Image 1: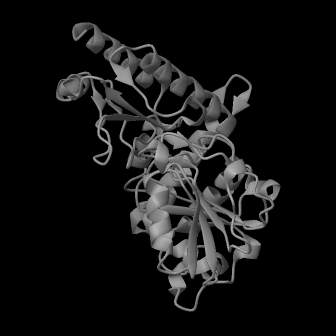
Image 2 (image 1 turned 180 degrees about the vertical axis):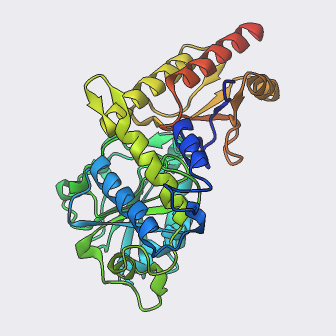
Length: 369
């Protein structure tokens, strides 16, 4: 039986192969007599799972050796506090506000940094464009500069990370890459720290990924809880407190699935990027060629992962969603703060799922023309 296509923004679809493997290993992982959820996080069985997951992720994302990979808890919202607790040094931090998530991030940072400067914002456009980095005016001596490199709700994405050094800025770049991690390569030469919840592209909710440059460790505020001090977490291989063992295991299976992906001569993340470009192109073209649907985001910064769109006649929204559900096209309702529709087409969404959505959208438009 064909599973429905799940367009949820997160928690989101997980590759069927990963779910099937997890189901097969649920009661007995590799002859250990235990399921992963029952294991000691310090036992040799789980340590092997953790070490493999970390190694696979480092390989997939080409993470340099001078960066630490941390598996934490709390999600992106908690990192909005944990980052300034570790990096602000109770001084000035800069933010570029490009949508709902970076807006939340800068508000949270004000609790911990001495000063928070919003040095650029897309609010005037309704968060449908990204402010040109050439127009940014970073603060002198800022502890870091924060961006959300893909805004899940508003559907804008940095297709190239800003080069802060070219802007005359020495601050490390912090990126919230929750909703497009592992969908494309990362230019680590431009990044000081990246964080993201796992529940969109990496696995189930409950696991948070932090990739942090080693020279940024060891500067946490005195008030920072020990379990959130990046240096403490790094020194203890993410085991200072009991880590989200099931989430790490599931992410590890997803990393292995990603490594197996192929598109022509490309493999791993390069293959996923090609696939994601094709999926996004298919859906955006269907929207742009339509008389019923509209996407308001400027073409040069449209997200490949989260595609919001609106029916020009919004009285038909309920009928559209009901028909989509009947077709096995799930979770297409837009975020409550912006309305409309949203299709999240993360790595686990196959091209056939996007094609099924496009076919339905065209049929619905013909019926309601």
